[in-house]
Image 1 (cartoon, rainbow, N blue to C red):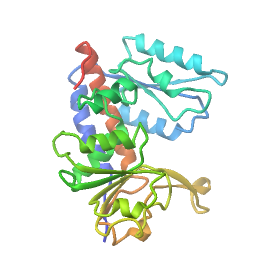
Image 2: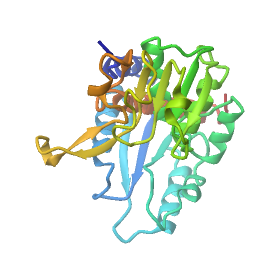
Image 3: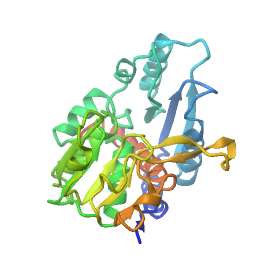
Length: 293
């Protein structure tokens, strides 16, 4: 049988630490900036609001109006960056054209860029002195640590090279933090032979968003999989006619992979818990006048 890497106990442990940290100072405030009522992040926003309330983080949304464009987004982020009552800002992404995510996120100081996706924060991550690390990457590692998956000194694969998930995750795994020091292979959409690239990997982190990508043809027998991918696939039996799916095929891999995180219920709840933890860190960094590492 393949072990289930359930995210709920991991998230619960993070939340418990976050509640204790919140009590050590003023309630941290987190603002989620998004495109408005039709935002594809609506489900994620509801989950953020519930999680914030449960740990004591003050949460609110800042929605763009239906006619707002890139300049309005930049102005909104500048305003939040200047607001001393706001400790952490999350810009929901990806953004459609003509919005420029890189330009917009650069309006935030590193301490308020709570998801760690701005250029300064990514640069600090590369130099092993991160201010914030993207919550999805932290969540994937938190699951691996909780279930004691083989990482330190071991062959590990990351599938995906986005600057907000895949690359930060690979940098963290290969870094010098306690329990890391993994030997990391990065695969992606241009990888010609995925099975060959994954051969020998003891733990695989898949961040692609391609259902069925991982099956017995490409996954080494006995490997553990942290499935970061998230897609909607047609399912007549599901509410709305669609269901969430990860990159790994859980039916095909059952009994083949040693462990697998489910989608949903794996990385998702842990990502939100890590985001709340980062909001507390943002509060503390700003109280000290800002710092890194």
